Image (cartoon, rainbow, N blue to C red; front, side, top):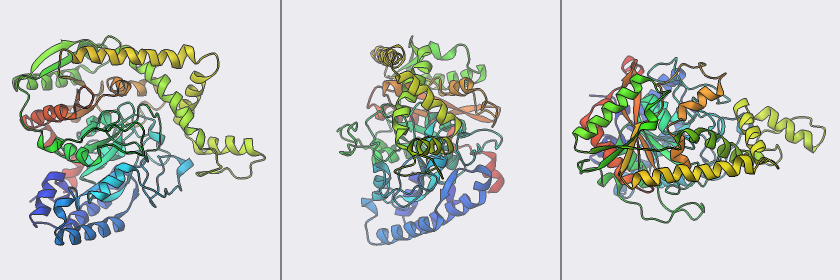
Length: 492
């Protein structure tokens, strides 16, 4: 019998409902696992084992009182990326400037998880303010990839992806501004879902780039992604960008297969820069969809080459505005012994922000400055429209688009820290999805050098049911999602 911490959400939920296990026993197993391996993985910034066991005890009481059916995640232990506000629990954003910050409210998605009965295990590591592709930009430490501890887990939701891959949580929340759920999911061999912009509330998410940020999920399989999305999706009056659309029962729409669906493959994503072995692995996955009955077609996204520069004008510009609030006055780190108000501002920001955050603030401030706004920010927004139109034209001919998540597998820790452009290229295939506001999912599809590769599926806005259905069909026809990293087999 496998340890309880290896269960998926839906497996654990079935066993809890049948009375075969208790929430306390399940949480105890995950907590023990977390305490046993996290010194090596470093997935968590803040662990809350005592609180988690208290929540599990309350879940068992609620189930005993006959309330289990009303709470779809009752007693299931999950982790939260440390850019989402948690009342009374540190929310650091991976930054020294918020090292001791404890919010007084929950993010809407955290509140919905709690209302659904989920057990919160703690807060996972992240690149500072979600700015990065490797989790090396965390002010505290680098998270390690459970498949190879010398490699990065991806970023910025690297802590959440590593926690799920290492069985330190049954599922986790992440955020995706330019690929920060899908890329770490691919690197760690788990499922990463980025919903449509507006599908999930951003209230209580510490903002990086407000027109791009979206809360997403990291799970062990597609069924779990559907279960998590059912809980966190839906309109929120506290978020003006949240869309008032009904939330489907995603987990009940997974069947039906892919026969007759049209799958588009962008030629632009298989050219220069991609590891040929990664390309071959992804193409093999697309061929599996064809074998399952899908019709595979070529599509063109001609402005794909402009996604990277467009993103790195818009996102830093929005970050420059959003991070202006961290000034040493209202909350967060405050410099000691400033000589005047201006030195308080500058010293607090100098001491509190790391080099990548400073780099993006400077890029964004420059792009928004007088004389450069039209040349940079306005032009980038115009190109963003062209990228969105590319997708619109493609989706007139196909139902979904399939391709790679990242041009390589997980790279070594320290390998790219001195080359920002090389680091940014890790997200080359994911950025355009955020610029267009579309949903995307990464599903494990193979290995290169014993490291996971992800298949990226992209759909039209609010077509999460189709994405999940295709991902589920592929998953059921293969066994990549069942593979466990050596860390797991080595420790039980």
